[in-house]
Length: 372
Image (cartoon, rainbow, N blue to C red):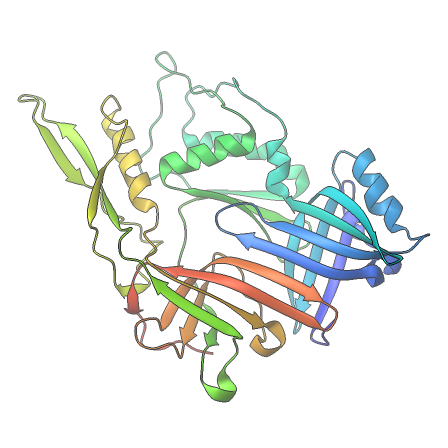
């Protein structure tokens, strides 16, 4: 591996422990994909020898233990980054020209939440955030730390009138509750191996940005490729239709995205060309209708996007999803802060590269400059 990058692999059926040196030495390729739109996935490739302990650690263990935990820690220039904290879901052995390769594929801990269907479990008198806390409590033994943000407009059903019930697996139900509230749900590893944050709340696009990615600035450039696009046709404005009590006249109310945790990253946002009515609110309470309207408005209108790749040795750090990153050297329209939507890690001996996708909701920078 690179001199500035050190990998640590932990494996175990319940509590992951450092893998034997023979296993780490056999590791040849690592692929990790982190995305804001779904679970993180990983793939580890090992050179398989006839008497390698890999046969027992991965192939046999995956078929005999309920869950095989896998943690991969990358230390870059002295700073630890947990790339993988999940479970192995599949193992595959292939042979070519007398050389055998073991491939281990897996996902983050959201996979554990998607095994059992708990449909029908009642939650009397519990708002959505209380239901989420009750569900996530089952997974504390896996190192999950629940971070649940209450909804802006509490809406609690009276038990004698209605009792909400669980629908589907824990993962499906928690995500449905997040979508109804205009929130997001994801599990993200912390710098401490074995611990992960289970976040249920509004999407946050504030915080200190990562070191700027730089394009076409000579010795200061640190990206291998970078491209930009802008699509202003997809911008919409949700409309809530309510009825005036006396005349029964319908009254349209536009619902803007007013989240202070998701401020504009572009100075010139796209103008909404379509007004979309919020469906299914006619028989709902005013609080419930407002929640559904805010939920639809909170779905980000990211008209500007960028994609590219970089070498970690040149960049000097790691890009991670759900963070801000500065960009410079692309011109006034695209310079400034961006939100990291997806990152793919490709690690081989002597090489560590990342491909990434960035988004934001407008053109022109909202900050005077970004820092390397």
